Image 1 (spheres, rainbow, N blue to C red):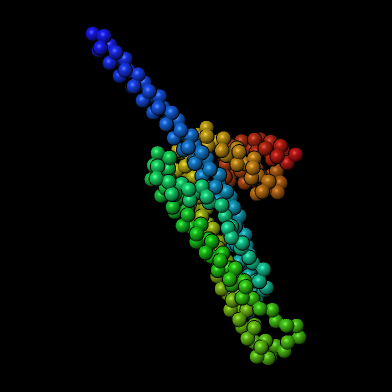
Image 2 (image 1 turned 30 degrees about the vertical axis):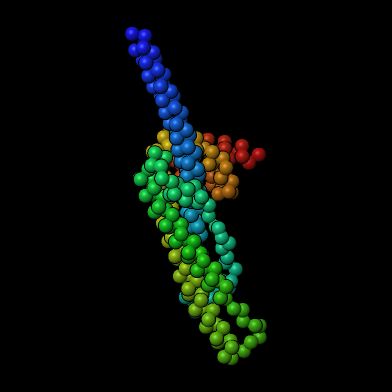
Length: 245
């Protein structure tokens, strides 16, 4: 009789210890998941912010250069440089290398993989732009325009200028694809974060980034309406004023 009671006590004790350990491991997994997803949220939001601006900038710049090209001329394209690494995607790479689907599941991994490919395409075209920019050759002042040297330099510059515009268009289109991929990944990520954690992350992102992307309060409100339409305008204005002090 007492042997059975003692055995039952031992079994109950072992089972309770197992539940406590399991609960601790689950809590640890949840904390790790929250850290990874929050870090991803920051990077994805940064990409859709910055690459939206890159896309608009490249389109405007390309239009100006194409007008010069249409006149049969070129401008000085020697100052365009990209110092790598240009972009921060450590959390994305970390998540892609994880083997724990409890933290980063297949759906999110697939979305991040698509984004990572597009980021690499942007980096590649930026390398091409830098290499093309380095090919610009200044024509010495006073050089006879009819001379072979002048004609050769001019011909090389206008040829490289065409490639420069071509790569500018590529950067515009690839940056747009990054924004699309980042939005797709955010759609998956936001669902997994849950509304409360998602909103907390978004308010923190706005506090940290608002003055990097907006030069005025009205511009900050305009951007927020595009990227965070669910956040009240008065909150955006309050954050902008508080972080501007």
